[in-house]
Length: 330
Image 1 (cartoon, helix red, strand yellow):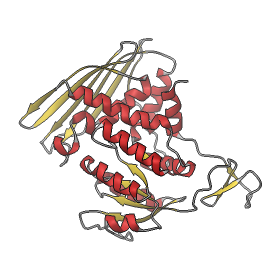
Image 2 (cartoon, one colour; image 1 turned 90 degrees about the vertical axis):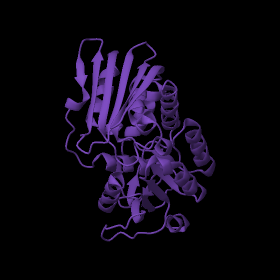
Image 3 (tube, helix red, strand yellow; image 1 turned 60 degrees about the vertical axis):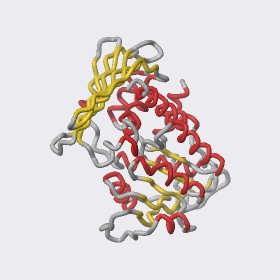
Image 4 (spheres, one colour; image 1 turned 135 degrees about the vertical axis):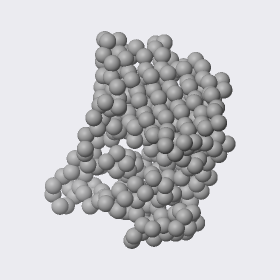
């Protein structure tokens, strides 16, 4: 199994089996009120969390934390806007980072603020879950991961695309049959920061999730070219990539200033056995927990273990390197 495949196995993180007895025997350990068979680091019974940023993703994080049972306990939210979330304290970032009962922060702001907030949190001894991209450059991302490692902390980047039923189905197929070509496209409207290239990065930085998916499925990629067409009402950016076996992957990102532009994502995989799979037509099972909840459970488990898998760091940094290479053709 390749390093990347091993990493994806870790990213889907199976839950340790719960043991029924109420007391911990030799070789067992308590974790968040449960007895686990696996002897690991003794994590705290509670991991106080503050959510920074109350956009769409941030509000979903708060919703899930309020409903969640386990180690992660919501201690408050940080937002430039007045929060209307009932029963949740709104505090300043300084207070959040100074509080001893806050052990982790979830950063759900626009990408322009990720580096600053990650550095502040790590310097204050907090674990970090950040929505992608972890940073605007590969160099900065590498520095942030090193800082987390030096501090003995976890810096974890979200990518719920790798938790979907469609992703898992494509991963299973590609493990036995070679891919012939892939066409990936994502379109939608501006959201207030995507169009700010200086503050939030060029399209394949802010849209790095798609590159991470391709890396995780097919291994390291070769950049063959890229281009960007800017219009008065938007832009279209395209990347030409190849797998190590020379199979083409075309990625297209389009955004419009029109408020009527709908978000449309399509990824079509053609395999060497002739089968064509459209990821958008693979049904996502209605399951609990949801994708963001699963992502937080992964984060919780990694914090309990005390170390981010090396493969995760590679995926985050390498995807940004590829994005920067694509942009060099613009």
